[in-house]
Image (cartoon, rainbow, N blue to C red; front, side, top):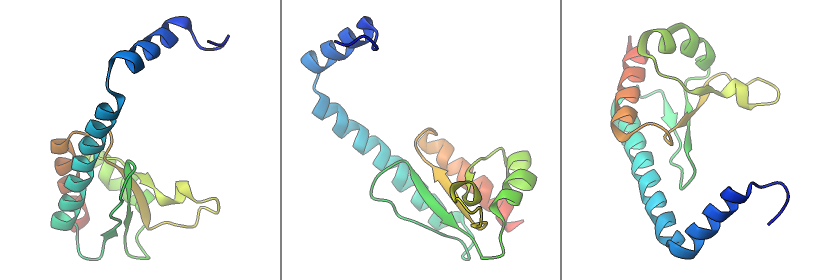
Length: 130
């Protein structure tokens, strides 16, 4: 115990670790997120215009999308994608200290369902192809 963490939270975690299989739960989570990652990669491969490329992560919750060098992911997000398709990502400019990477974006597959991932990528591709 410590003086910062509430006792009910400590008791809950202790009970879980004593009575549940954490390793099994962790394996379930790995499978769950791998399925989402694979779904997003397949949707991007299927629907994105050929001038866009993406990473193929081996873990984590995000992948990196890269457009042509003259493509501005912030302008596209604010002027097209959010208002028309209701899809969001983090523009690359927000992830660089010098704010100089305008054609990249971080896309998350952690929160949306598999169906939402496919729908979101389709909507994004429709806006890119318009």
